[in-house]
Every structure is written in C-alpha cells, then in structure tokens.
Length: 166
Image 1 (cartoon, rainbow, N blue to C red):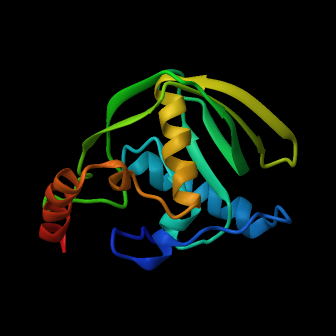
Image 2: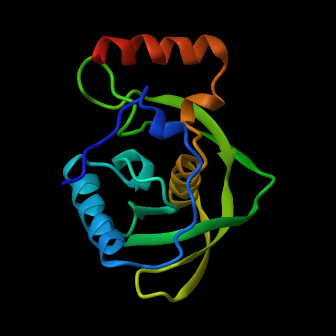
C-alpha cells in the first residue's frame, strides 16, 4: 500500500532515476497511483509523491478524462508563451487537509515524450491544463515543487498554511 508523502519529506526533493525495466512492481504502483489520484480529486501524481525515486508519473487530462501512465517522461520543448494559472499539489496540504493553491507561470504548451506501460514510445504536444499538469509532475521527478516558482513572500504564505497542517 503506497502512502502519500507530504511537503517536508526529503524524498520530494530527490532527483529520480530512470526506469530501466517496466516491472510488475512499477505497473502495480502506477495502478495504485491512479486510484489515489482519483480518490483525492487530483489530476496528476508522480512517483516521489508515494516515496518511489524512479522517473514515472500518472496524470489525467481533465477535459477528456484520459489517463496517461508515463515512464521516463521528458519535455522536449516548451512554448515561449507563458500562462499564469492556479496550481495545487496533493503533497502540499493546508490545515484543512486540502491542497494549498498559488498562481504559477508556466509555458502554455509543451512537447513531451515518454514510454507507456506496454513499453511503447509515445509523444504528444500538450497545451492548456494537460501541459501544466505534465510540467508540474515532471518537476516532481527532478525534486522541484510548484512552490519553488513563487516569490519568497508568496512561498512563505503557502508554507504558513502547510505548517498548520502538521
């Protein structure tokens, strides 16, 4: 049974290692991550958020409901155009046990490549919410949290809410 890691857990700051072999353990973890993401009304979950330091994630396109299971995802290109949108994270919870949100600027669209759970090479151009989600989740694989993009004042405001959770 996987357990959600919360802000302050050092595993969230580790750079994950590539997946060399798509094992039954990884497939099982991805299935459980989809379940956890759905139960918590999330749209993405990366391996370090459940304590696994390997490069894989699950995400959902909120517009279509399509679920992606991405192994060794890599963002190949990012648009010059950026968009500011509110972001939250299932690992950054406030005193009410719900994600804390803050506005983050990110590229509006990205091209991403990954291997799916069947070992097939995949690629897609994503824009809007799916682009934001894949950027947020791939950041997790590099030990980056969305709060790292905030000014020090805004980050402190978020962290005050997080400390109330603990």
